[in-house]
Length: 375
Image (tube, rainbow, N blue to C red; front, top):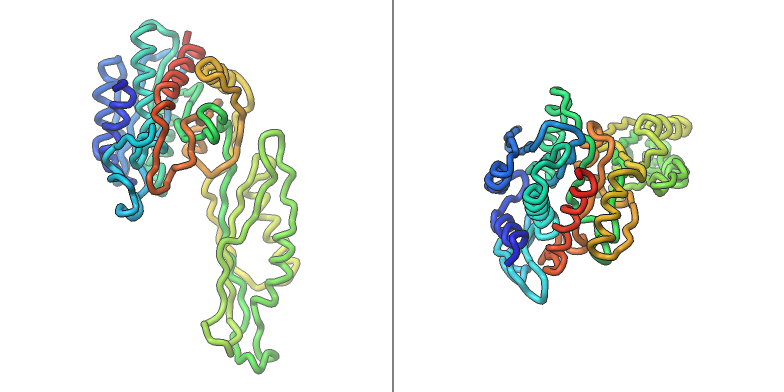
């Protein structure tokens, strides 16, 4: 059994359902300290965070990831126990196999091999690991980033081990992510008997024209790296449940997934302008889940693309699709951030897995990236 596979299985066996770490990071510390890493635990609330650094010079290349996993779902529906790593049909099964304990194991073993071969490499290597990526993400990576910023610790490159590949290992690198912003719109009317509409004001009816306009609005055209900004309704509710009562209010939950072609503030202003134009009596509460970030094609993405091509023969593509990640926090203190990891088809699902044949190539890609950037 390879060292990468053995470490992956050791991590999967720890049932670190968010925000629990269950000793994963201590396992990493036991492997990193002998390599010359200075390891700092930065706990916050129920969350365990790790910052580890080897070296004091620039450039600083950081591997970032999370030890927490999502809940298993109904355990009875798994073909094998979710926290008992199992081989079946050429795959390794277990919660976290793809998202993202294999990536973390590959980070560590790649670093071990690189340091053994090049103990006097230039620059520094860092690890930023949290147990709060799958949860609210308020006590995790953002805490570490704020701490590093406060003490002036400069990151130059960051590789986040999120599962980005689609059809095969290496076909996709994420060089950015869209921002996410939610709104809860409450449109106020006047409740009344449905037989006497002149004595009431139906908020669904008065909202409908504005809602139609919001669905048709072109928020931006996107750009070279991003699709156009998307606006979608996720929930809508009005009424008491009775068939003879005009509702007194209508509540709509919606979400923007927005590109760097727009800003959160600009989108908010445009939504308010549409609602105001229709003369609605409303309240609107906003929640910005994350701002978009983008690393244009350059040193880091080129180093990763070369590592992937040399190891697998695959020509990778840059992408900004998908949900949010902790890259949004790291990008505030690091000019070049990309995400790369194994295929993502099984993440968060029953019987999550990774192909056994992908594990060593994944580790080798990370090692080649170290060589491309720090030699």
